[in-house]
Image (cartoon, rainbow, N blue to C red; front, side, top):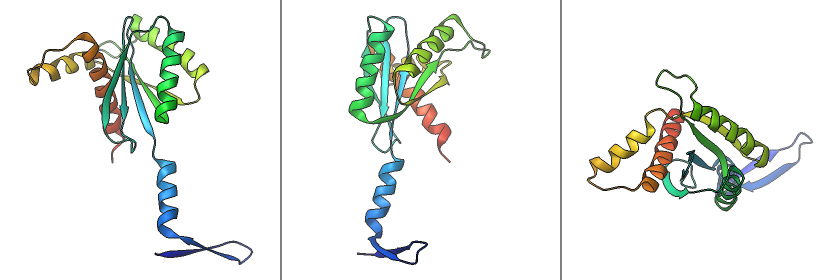
Length: 165
């Protein structure tokens, strides 16, 4: 196996397995990302694969309250080792805040106080319509719950695409 030598300032050397060192670094950099499509009745959730590269629709939650929703999202975050949460922000077509985007911003503030993971708002204009169109294009009938989790996956896809170089 390839070996590497790390030198410390006191001129002692440490032999390490280079492949093992690279794997440790990769594990530290990899994280799952979760997206949330927040709605008054239902909340769609999507998550990336362990490498953080592919979005997967996960579930639709019908929470009793914001507190209930945050607790359920915390469970998903913990179970899946999520390192970042993207929350769709439903701005108007002109990019201005809406009544719903103000509601989402208040929810995100509550969420940030109760979880230890970074939370980012993401412009979600047209996302629900894109989700509906995906089902139509495939000739599949869809329930509202399906649309919510697919909308979350589209939010996540857009975020991932924006970060690719």
